[in-house]
Image (cartoon, rainbow, N blue to C red; front, side):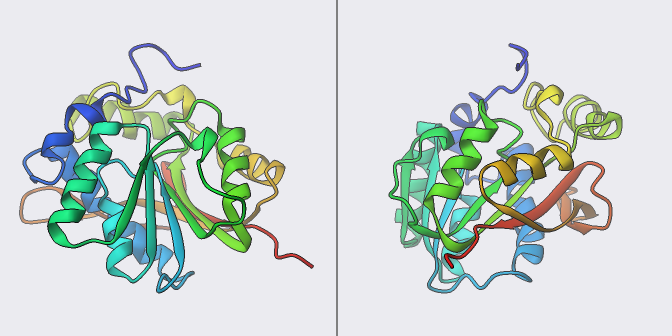
Length: 238
């Protein structure tokens, strides 16, 4: 169970007005993660023309990147102010994205509706992981793909994600994560299987360099010790 001072999901609404301003370092960090994630995802799926749900979309960084790749994108998040910021930015830039306010435990979409569900920086925050994965499986079409990343649960991950990222470097707000909610790969695989999803390839994700602003850039890594990224498939009907 999350500690009251941890897993603070109010930060996404608190900073919604500045989501696309590039003025806030930790928000830029979230934005900088998108190309690194897509570098790996793009090896495994073709986005063009596919119906894609961005589950836990916040202010729309991943959703807009997928829209630019030709996907038919829907974004959903419980943070209503972040959703409003996403809607406003898409309207400003001409993005064709549907945004909804809602929870991963109760997705407001029909069965077998999406080709892909993308869920990044989310699973370690949800109240009911098995329910979220069950909903993901429900809304995926047979043969559809669930693409995710999350944080491993171990001493090194806690040091990197809490002590370094939140307390020392301040590239994330204090209280963003609750290390008790981090997910070991074996635990996630078991939960995916219970939801009827078959785990595919996984790898690590983490810092690969620093840009001109002094912010970290990200990409795939061989070790899954801290953040790991992967995909799972809903079996096709026989």
